[in-house]
Structures are given as C-alpha cells and as structure tokens.
View 1: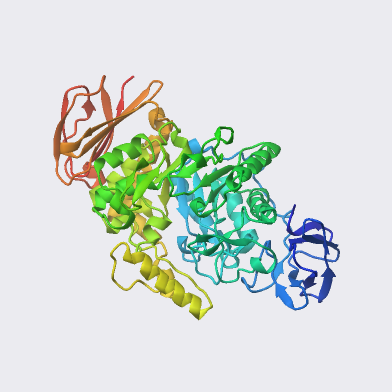
View 2: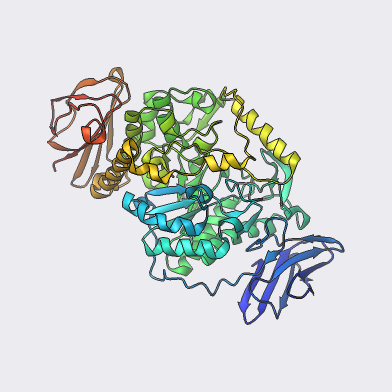
Length: 608
C-alpha cells in the first residue's frame, strides 16, 4: 500500500495515511487557499482521497478527529521543520542523467562516510558536490551519507529523525539530495544512505497519534519499540518497507545502511529484515539492477547476512565492529567499556582471518558468551573500518584516531584496513588525519529534552571512566568545532597521510590479490614475541605479502614462510612517508632478513 502524498501531475494528488482506529481524517490544505479534503477509510485502516487542484509544494496537515492537527507521517518534505506542515513533492520532474548507471557491486566499493552538516562549511548537499573530485582523486567510489531524514532543528547526527520519508530541510531538501546523487552517479560514485528503522527521535514524533506504530512489548534504549510483531504490525511493516523503496525509487540511492538492527525487536515467523530483503530483491529484479542492504549490528550474528533460503535475513552486507575494536585497542591501549573484550594481537589475527572476533566465546564486557562464526562468509559481506561516526563521536571529547596515536601508528591502521579482505570504509577526514573532533550535537527546542540528552551522555561516558565535563551537545559551538578543516590536507603530515591512503587504495584496486575479497586463500603468521603479524593473500596468479609491526620498537626477523620472490610496493617507514629510515629490503624471498620499523607496515607484491 502506497502512503503519503502521491503526486501524479496536472494538479492531481492521491493522499493516503494509515490510521485504523480513528473515526475521521481529513487533509487540510494550508495555502494558497485553505481547503479541507475528507478522506475515506478502507478495510485495512488506510484513509485515502484523490484530489485535484493541488500543485507541487502545496503545504498540508492531516486533521485527526475534531481538533488534532498533525503533519503527514509519510511526508516527503517538511520545509518548516518537524512541527510545520508537510509539502507535496513532484518526483517526476527532476532531470536525472543516470539512466545508464548500474551501481558499484559491494566487492569493488571503497566507502567514504559523510555527515552532510559538518562535511563542508555550508553543510548542504550542494556544497558536497565540489568535493566529489577530491574523493575521486583519493580513490573513493562510494559515499555513505549519515541519515538525512527530517530531524528537529538544524544540527543533529540524523539518528533523531522523525519523518523517515522527508529530506532534511536545512541540508537542501529533496531537490538538493537528488542533485548530489545525480552528480555522484555522473562521476562513477555510488551512494549509500543511512536509515533508522529501530526507533524514531523524541521531538516531533507524531506517529503514535495515527496508529500503533510502537509497542510496550519490549524495552529499548529509546523507549517503546517499533511495532514489527505485535497486533496491527502489518501497517508498521508496510510503512518501513515503503520507506526503503522510496529512497531507491525517488532518489536513486544505490544501497541503504540500516542502523543498529540489534535494536529491532521482531519475534514473528518472518523477521522484518527478511521481508525487507525480499521486497528489495523484487524491486531490483523489476528495475533490472541490484539495490543493496547493509546492516549494522553489534550481535556478531551471521543470520543477518545468511541467505534467506538458509534461514537468514538476506542482508547483503554487515558492518564489523570487531575489526575496529581489534585495531583500536592494540594501537591506543584502551581497555575500558566494550574495549575490555579486545587488546590482544590474536584478536587482530582473527579479525583479519574471519571478521567477527567473538564466535561464541565469553565476553568480559557482556558477561556472557557472544557471537557466531563468520569464517565461511566472503569478505565482501562485511564492512571494516578503523574510524566511523560512532567510534569517534561517542567518545566524550570526540577525538579522532589522529589525536590518540602517533603518526606511524596512524599509517599502520590505514594499512591494516586496506589489506584486509573486507569492504573498507573511511570516515570523513580520516584520510588526511583530521584533528578536529567529531562531537555529538543536537538542536532541540524542548528544554527538558535537552537536559535529558545532556545527562544521558554523561551516564554513557561513565562506563569508559571519562569523568570530565563533556561538550554541551545543544551548543552551536559543539557543532561548529566538528566541521572538517579541508585546507589541512595540503599541509605537512596531513598531506603525507592523504597520499599514503591514496597509494593504499590504488594498490588495492591494482593488485588482484587485494581487490578480490576472498578469505579462501588467506594465510596469517603471528610472531607474538615480536608483536609482528604477516599476511599472505592470493588470487589466481596474484599474491601479496604484508608485514605489520604492532610495537613501538624496531623488529628484526627472518621471512622463512614464503615461496618465490617479491618486490616492495609500499613501506610506511620510508622518508617519502615521513617515516624512520627503513631496513626492509626492496625484494624479498624465503629466508630474507629484515628490520621493520616501529608500527611499520610493508607490502610486497610476489612474483607468480
């Protein structure tokens, strides 16, 4: 069932809203002349009306019963924010130029995560466009936008959105997003959009006035759970499935990243993720090209990416937090909060070899066994990263890795990411060692809500033993401090780090053993006493050897575990990368002696 205002041209518009328990619903046109359009309810509880004389941009509310006036829960645009009227949008008139575009398959993606509001000084979709050439030069072929669904005010990460179909007005609204996606496709860049189906934000959340969108059957960190399996859940499931298809159909989005699916509660025989993947597959078949679903979960549960016919949910790709935690703890030494489960080099080895570090081992942090084995799942079903919005922004002071580790360790972290057999994700600014923090920020209008958010953040930080006063999330200064300093990438070590990332990405695409995301021909040697991890990846006639030093000391060692000769392609200790003088040979073969620098990363391409 289609929902919202469906504009079909020539002043004709179909209004449809789900409100099964109401006795009266009308559509109130606000301007240019006030007009009330009565809606008729069908047996499924959907109120509908076909109207004429409606033009694109027409503002409207729904009147529920006698007195309650609310925006459309499936509004496509909220030009005056979450409390204002909804606006009719004509999706047929945008001049798309991507008819030949087929997207980028996950196994070829190099993803760059963007928060639109802080990516540029202007903080709009249009201001992102001039930066696309910079990303192409880096080697990026896919951007991931943090949520752009309408949220309260002008400053927010996007996870407090309350109109899942509407594009944030302060970013540039529907036309701005379309212009950005269109230009991305013209430049060969895929677009992933972050969507939130596990909860809605607190301010401007009017869904409960319409229908049982929420249930108290479960407890969640955000209050009542979204009703995916309780009575009258069909209308809720339709709402979110239609939302996913809405982004593909009207905005030409290539993939959706589903936020925190571990927060979705569904004990029904067909999980909402399974039904969603069915519907997206059907849509893809109809469109003649693939659209993808990425899922974020902290459960280390392979059911998420297992095929539906094998009892899974059929998501295409899953984020792998364990990879981040393994790298982060080794390089920073942090052991508080959920980092208590990591910090051993064996965790890094397992993350490289399998993906999930926890496959039903005991978790100290969770105080129970945790996870499932991802060993047999191909690397292109997992996204790996060394930074992202959560891992940076949920720190009290929003420090990036560049503020937590030294220059050599920063290069090692980048190297580990790019030689892993997974889809790499770069958090905006990471590629040049951005030093500005990425903090948590909001712009709510309710003083009590602001106070609750401020106190809630302090409680979250207590688990990490961070006892300072955190930056005020409501302050505009907190938002301004989080904006990227683009000029930095042209200077000093920032420029070096960017060139290092550029070289890594180039080699990853150029060498088949790196570009093929298979774990089948991956071997790892861990020299624990030397804090050294060596990795060999093969693909048909291509082979690489990578040596990584996770200590702050030079490490002498013999390479006695390979066959054939190899030529050095990248060495982080070389002067051109502002490293200490390297002692690793230009060519390597069995029984070669070398000395790898502190936090050194060395990559050889082997002869075949």
